Length: 330
Image (cartoon, rainbow, N blue to C red):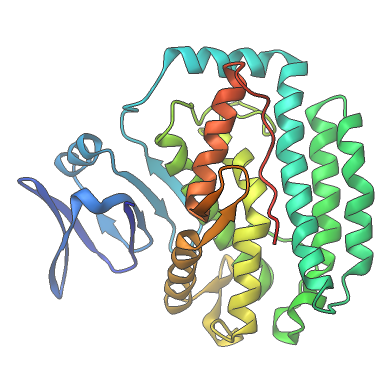
């Protein structure tokens, strides 16, 4: 499996013949091209056209983030698997309101059921999350009654609000009180972690879409408009509760991230580089972790689960098999 390279230092990325290297004040570090699937840049890094041409040739995606850890953009190389047929199928399902709803409902159902799984997991460990769990379970059946994507987004937002109310009971740490969901800027430590984790999830889903015939610009739940990518946002909804949120609970619970790992900047509460490195390292481990996949009868990694989700979507769009979103079964 190809690896993700995370760059936090300042420096320059270069191509030399058939290799890449990262140069800093401390010297050069060569990048194993054949093993690298994506590069995530958090530091101040300079690149040139020659370098980007080589990334395109080797089908390596480059995601870059601001100093504050916000996702800024992606160098998405020329799609080697791009398919006119698949783009037409995606557009066809997007433009037909009923077909679009079928797919969008599954994204919300997957998100809602995975939120329920997380709450059930902690309820079983005697955390006081019974009320939010019941509220989410009550909302799940109404997904089928939604007549448009705006109503679906409202249900999804409602489920997430109940879910977020359970965070304080799950975490049980006064340094990480939830209060309310705030984004730019995040107003407390927990919101900073959620925003950082979600940014990473959007990038990872985008990298996985690149390895399929799907076009990331045509989503179904999130409106396809002048925003560059939307399909990755759709797919992320399914996996954020079971990958990002569970990781955040673990990092705080094991004291791997504490209140000392944050600083206050002009853009709200920021995560220090040491904590960002710890977060991406643990996320990388989580994505490599395997679980038993009942449908295919073997162990698959969390990262592979994302790709399998995209393959299921392709089959749905081609009329081969109705799409049903992944739900964790711990």
